[in-house]
Length: 305
Image 1 (cartoon, one colour):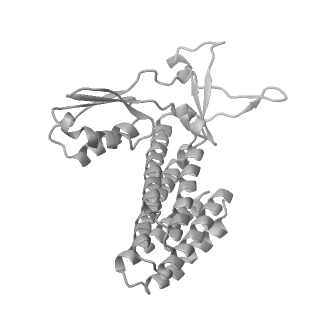
Image 2 (cartoon, one colour):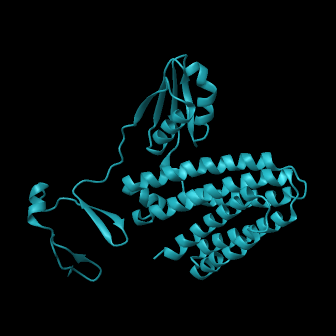
């Protein structure tokens, strides 16, 4: 470790001396250009070379023979999250599994089939990560979830909205995979992290947020199916309470309001008490899970420094 002091070099600038050993190792001399990249709010990276994005496209080949559909789905998901630009699926089972594979590929934003034969499917990634906003992706998830809750409450009044809610849950899933991919990329790519306006220290919190949003959407979908089959006023009132808690916690996140986040957590006891009055234990378990996801988001806000 080297310790240096800042030296004032004019009215608006300062200089910092660099270790001679580092200069010699990188073959630097007087007048050479150095590049400074922000790593976080308190750290800088000094490099003799300008940071370049890898220009080489990453490709992966997945053999699907002998694999169940869920295994193929996990393989494709892994390739997508690891930013492979070309995913080639090969095998004698391609034809028989084409429908399932196409459905899987459609789960991911901008992953499109460019070629298909009896033995091969090639999917190309058409997404430009530099043109994607992480915050807008999260805001989009939030907006969809709000409409899902609203329509679930309407379902208790006899409106048949479950199928529409299912499609919106599917959209939330796609955005979850996209956000996860962006966050994983930000860990490896300083320029992407800068473009996304995310410090690496924040990546885990953002990831935990989108995980809980995706889980919450799943629970809403499940409740909407129950609401379609059963007009339960008591359950409807509980969902309305949960709706308000969700709106409050997202408001707390937007305003970084730790007091509001804490008040939402303290309301969990009211929900648990209402759950005890429900006859169906499965429904009660879903309600408790929804409350837990809201509390998890609250803890992200409270724990933020």
